[in-house]
Amino acid sequence: MRPDIDAVAAFLEPRHADVAAAVSGFGKEQLAPHPDPDTDADARIRARALVPLLAAAGLYEAVERLDLRAVSLIREGLAWHSPLADEVYALQALGSMPIRLGGIEDIQRTWLPAIDRGEAMCGFAMTEPEAGSDVGAMTTRATRDEHHWVIEGRKSFISNAGIADVYTVFASTDPTKGAKGISAFVVPADTPGLHFAGAQVMSAPHPLGELVFERCRIPADHLLGERGRGLGLGLATLDRLRATVGAAACGMAARALDEAVAHVNSRKQFGKPLAEFQLTQDRIAQMATELAAARLLVYRAVWAKDRGAERVTLESAMAKSYATEAAQRIVDGAVQLLGGRGVLASHPVDKLYRAVRSLRIYEGTTEIQRLLIAKEVLGGA
Ligand SMILES: Cc1cc2nc3c(=O)[nH]c(=O)nc-3n(C[C@H](O)[C@H](O)[C@H](O)COP(=O)(O)OP(=O)(O)OC[C@H]3O[C@@H](n4cnc5c(N)ncnc54)[C@H](O)[C@@H]3O)c2cc1C
Image 1 (tube, rainbow, N blue to C red):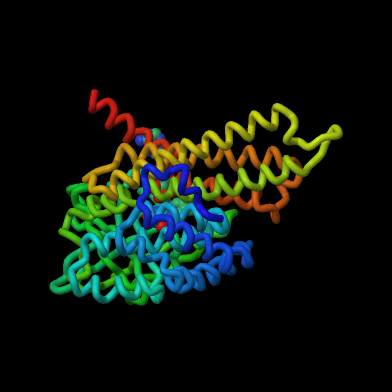
Image 2 (cartoon, rainbow, N blue to C red; image 1 turned 30 degrees about the vertical axis):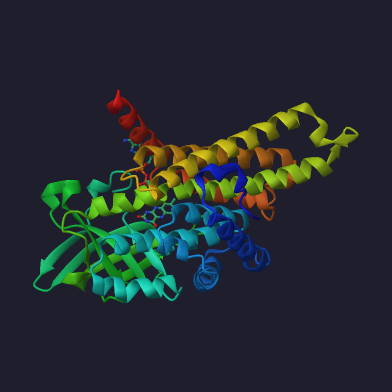
């Protein structure tokens, strides 16, 4: 699948045509022959295998260059074929961004080349059992011990938990200060005291799990950015990448629409193809229109960030919430148009139905995005 660059051309540069061609070639050669695995164990093996393949195709260069329009085109193209490949790509960006934005030179030199060459896999550990949307409630603590930080706590719902080589970890260094006392750290996966506490198995393949930190000592220079500014670093990371979740949603929605169109053109009932019934046409028209609108919101947000906007909180929140909600409706519409075939576990639209659901939850739920939008709009008024 080649992302439709013409429909969002107003937001792109000539170089983005090459990006769309590169992800299209990768999808055809590396993803189409290998459907996403069904079990968590197989998904973990496949996810690790994808890290160097994505690097060999040059797809991480967009992350290195912080070219968010390119990242979005890549996420669309990957998600069309394989939500798992999109997850792997997205986490390399999400896990490495705080290192790019806040790591000292030594730390950047240790990790970024390895990440960009696909030799190291990343994770981003913010969520805790009692601190999801309310990040400021986190109880993981980092205490200074001479030349080290000692981390204690538990993180849950962490993508790539148990298979990553390095994690960006958020912990409170000043518990009395709430959100203003959170700091960010880079923690190599083989650090003594960091344990993988088990997989959290999803209905769609996505390596997810819990991490436990027990007197986990890391050198003082593993602090990312300034002490107490970790949440700001996390939010700056999300400000850049949140809209690209919308791009992944558009990739999944485009695949669902393609499957639905192929089906209604070939499936005959009552003596003619389903496509000739007006109720079918109405649903297809709604799906296509919502997809087009979602893509415009996504590319508007990443275009604004790429051209130097300091904050794109409003644009990203609109793009992420609208695109992920629309993708859910589009995928559901495809399942309905496929009839019984659409709920067979092996069918691409059933796999998409399971995969697309979590996009409305991670990197800030739809409700939290709407709170952000309302705050900006009401504040402006
Ligand atoms: C597939 C997947 C991958 C993930 N990967 C990562 C990862 O790599 N790293 C990481 O740190 N986290 C990750 N997460 C965690 C994710 O970011 C959280 O699940 C998310 O922030 C929501 O937190 P929660 O699940 O605790 O839900 P809660 O915060 O408990 O929210 C439950 C419900 O209440 C609503 N709600 C909460 N507060 C309000 C409010 N003020 N007003 C109105 N409604 C509200 C929410 O919108 C939601 O509908 C992942 C989650 C999933 C599902």
